Length: 213
Length: 213
DNA sequence: CGGGGTATTGAGACAAATCAACCTTGGTGG
DNA sequence: CCACCAAGGTTGATTTGTCTCAATACCCCG
Image (cartoon, rainbow over all chains, first blue to last red; front, side):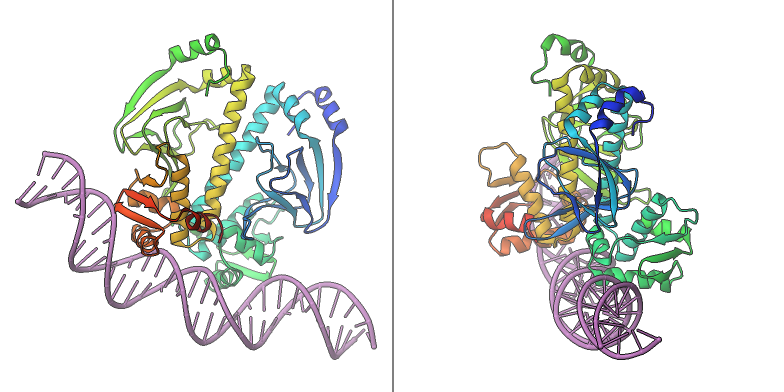
């Protein structure tokens, strides 16, 4: 985030930032609460979600170390953020952060990019939810996870999130998610080592299913 | 957009801006083309859409007079914009516009708000596509149109877009859209005067269906 | 008063949701 | 070390909803 920014300028902000830890399933922030901080995720995985007041949940994104959280331009968060693993985060006061960002072109540019990436991701997801079959949505998720994960063997995918989280992300039920995984295994696209470890066998076909109709 | 900004400061930008007209179904801009301009919509209705390279289309938003178009932070547009009616727009060179925005806090704030509104809209749509039945999605659309339209009688809704556009917006087929309208009429929530004129009879129930599960 | 594009309606096929039973896994205590 | 339990995941049978394909109705424009 601070790449290209003079270290001395950033120091005051870092000085007033706080390091925090979260346990699995703990919430970092809640939708509609006042947006007082922005965060960077140091370590672990979290999940952005929105819950309608009737209790219906939509998972909006999965975020990993290095990602930014809470960059709303409104004064309230538009979503909740929940830890999927034990998590370490750096917390910055939002007001000061935005001020600093304003006075540094590079930083400003970085923040902008984050914003447009979030939007781009949301648009992709819209596409996936719009008109895709269950197994295609699973491919969409797997490809996303594959691209994001930093381990060497990109064909081994770890599903940190539970089946319910996947279902709420893709607009399906857990049963359908389960069956879709089974089908992809059946068709030889993937291998399921355990519920949370999947191996990609046919990347090309997986990508086809993930992007096109 | 320029509310709260000193007129004299804005004048140079306005001087180099251009007024343009578009016919129905004409494109204002295409996805992946270079983002050279930003626009404000003076008059008429347009539609933001994305087409996957397999030809699958997702309508992302409907925009009305007063709305802003092309506020990407990347250098390419992430979507296409097509006119639904004859349209009048004001075109600003993007580079100069962003420069001006940077030097005016009020304008900067306005631009930010636009960005976060777009994101908020996308999140709402995600929710709608995630886990809603066809007739609930139609309610979602009707409520959106109702809130946005500026005519006096808010219960009379004009559907400027065709059934195919609605279908691509809500992730359905035209037949299902048609049936969903029929069902809502059947149940007494709406009255269908013509394919493009709908009257809301039971707003409360419509809003329930639009937002909750 | 046609005629072409657009919308509606119907019947059958198909995918996903639902409801219910069963299987795995990881942790606990005997 | 094994039996047991609880939570999460899988599988099966049935129902519900949407898509698909096809036929028919509508309406605006010339």
